[in-house]
Length: 351
Image (tube, rainbow, N blue to C red):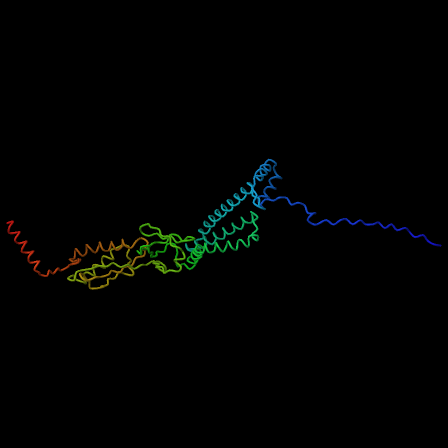
């Protein structure tokens, strides 16, 4: 018996045409050039229709530059973020300074160094936080930032050098606020002043005549600096005095010491001393060496006080203060003799 074969329905599978991948992809919505602005726009639009319509209106006012689109809403968001980050960094810097000043265990130099380091950290963190809020991709700016950073490096080389120099000065405490250093102006005249502030770029030095010199930090690092109060605030000063060759030298030295000891600002230890320096043309010259502890209050006023006291002591004890004397020798000549004769004849005529 011949069996019937079961009918096999072979359903032909229709092969669908393969579409290209880019044809299946949906058209990406146009995004704002600022990621933070796009996020704020979506969040606000979902919460309030009125505010959302205002945002849409601001966002519609835009200009396009190639693939970049910048709207008025983007500008407002960027301005708000930048101002907010700057205000936050400024506030945190103020708070950190007040907190550091409460630590009594730190001296003035350590407090200033800590304040500067915290300020740098706070502003650096604020910069990167602003970059993150604005959604700026730094990797896309790698090539441009390399060239731009090289240009900035050459342009701000002195600025960063002064910044690092200021930090080093505060760390090794060679120059600190309150020190008295010798400064020289543009004319070459040397004066002294007290350091008021060590800034990011320069050191502020105030002299006795209230002139304020701003000396770059780097100059104090590479040049020789005369610091009167580096290891000690004791400063020795000299008062030159001249007396007559006919004076009693022992009595003159005694009166000089008495005048120096009478000044309140001159230290008793180490005591003042008097040295004979030279035999001058018109006087025997002495130098009074004395020590003071407060050079920031002036040196010339101490010298003036000693000389004023010594003036009256010399007057009371008969010590002569000499002045320059010159002998004039006139050589005779025929013209001079005729001049004398003419003068004598004119005198007789008048009589």
